Length: 216
Image 1 (cartoon, rainbow, N blue to C red):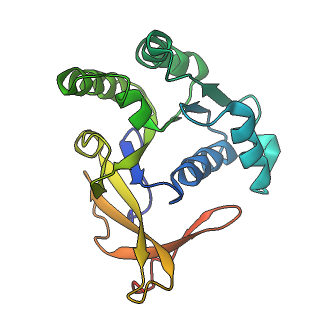
Image 2 (spheres, rainbow, N blue to C red):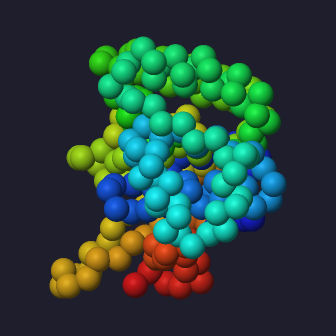
C-alpha cells in the first residue's frame, strides 16, 4: 500500500481512535529498525516506561534487539516546561549523539495539547516539524482522532504537516454484529500509494494488513 514502505527521512502520522493499534504500529516500526541494526528513539507521552516495556515483551519479539540501540524516553505531559524543552531543544541533540535513524513520538496529540491557544499550537508544531526535517531520521507521530471527526487528528494539524498519513479506524457491520479494523493511506508525498481502504488485524507480534482483500 506504501509502494515499498515509508520514505527515509520523511514524517509519517498514524491517526486513529483508541484501540486501533497506533502504539502497536509504532512499536513494530521501531522493532523492524532495530532488527536492521538501526538506532531508535521512542518518546512516550502517555504509557509508563515499565508498561511499555511489558507490552514489548508480550509481543514475542527477539528482546535482544531492544538493547543499547533503543532509547525509550517517558515524558510527563503535565510538566509543561520539561516536556516542551525535551522535545524541542534536546531531541535534535539526542538524535545526533545516538545516530538514531528512526524517531517515534507517541502520541503527538498530548504534545499539541500542552498549548492552550490554537495559534501557539500551530506555531510550535510548525517549528517542531521544521527542526525534525533537518535531522537524518524518519519520524513517526501517532495521534488520536478528533471526537467529532473520526477521520482527522485531534487538533487537525499533523495530517497537513506530515508527508504520509495512515488512518486507522473501526468499521461496524450493517447489522452492528461485528467490528472490523480498517486502514487507509490518506496521503503520501513523493510516492505512489494505494488509495483503497483495507482490513487489518492486530496480532500478538504485528499488525497484519490484508492488502489483497476487499473491504469486508
